Amino acid sequence: MYLGELSGLKLGKATRDAFGDALRALGEKYPDVVVVDGDVGNSTRTEVFAKAFPDRAINVGIAESNMVSVAGGLAGAGKTPVVASFACFLMCNAYDQIRMSVAFPGLNVKLVGSHAGISIGEDGPSQMGIEDVSLACSLPGVAVIVPADAIAAAAATEAMLQYQGPVYLRLGRPKVAEVYKHGCHFEIGKAQTVREGDDATVIANGLMVAAALDAAELLKREGVSVRVIDMATVKPIDEEAILKAARETGRLVVAEEHLAHGGLGSCVASVASRIAPVPMAFVNLGDGFAESGDPDGLLVKYGLTPEAIVEAVRKVR
Image 1 (cartoon, rainbow, N blue to C red):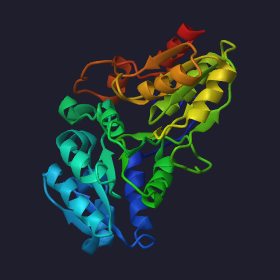
Image 2 (image 1 turned 180 degrees about the vertical axis):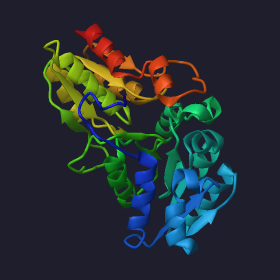
Image 3 (image 1 turned 60 degrees about the vertical axis):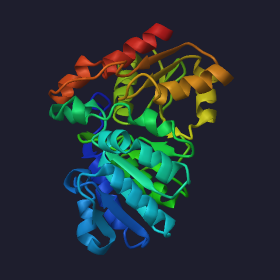
């Protein structure tokens, strides 16, 4: 069973695949876009763009820090560089270069971290980006996006290219449920309510949006009405959506495929504690590394399931 199946959602493409296809399709529309990849274009799917626009694609090899510095130079020359690698390689290996060559000067660089979270499975903890959102959010002026499905990822790709300033886009390896089967109007800084409810609100992003919808379906059987909000933009976060949910449902649960500290949960709690304090609970990876294994098995072992969200909702009621 995949996340979203309980809600009747169809299994769609991976967000990394949607990004690659969208970038290729947008290549003509945005002639200033240049792709810079760290020798993993077959995984990040930037190879789709590179094959269509070979004179606008640069492979710097396994040298993430240099990759970011090259992108900074391209942005300074008026291009729109899209820098792609695994989330952990990009945000952990090249953090200082991102800080000094992108964030500090506020350059128009688009940072794309693929293979994020523990759902990459057998590749193991050395390649699992589980602290990337926290690192990206800590950089002044950097927008941070975690789309829920392939449709949202494609829309987020264009929104990212239109946005003036540095952006971090987090993508996943596995296929995910189609949350937005009827289309997605994506706007950076705006959350989307994907299910209405009155008794509690689950705020999620990435593949945990589908898990939240499954949890809401399970709780419906108990007579509990749960609102589900897709907070795809972690920064700048939609404070109005958090305030509205807190006031109208009185309870918040935050679910994410990330460590407990510094991710979506921390950002939502910071807002809620300041403007609308209500009982809260969190579903995340806690404070530890995962291990190599089957992706579905890892999600179960580390508590990233609809059932874990159900228990979290029960705790705050």
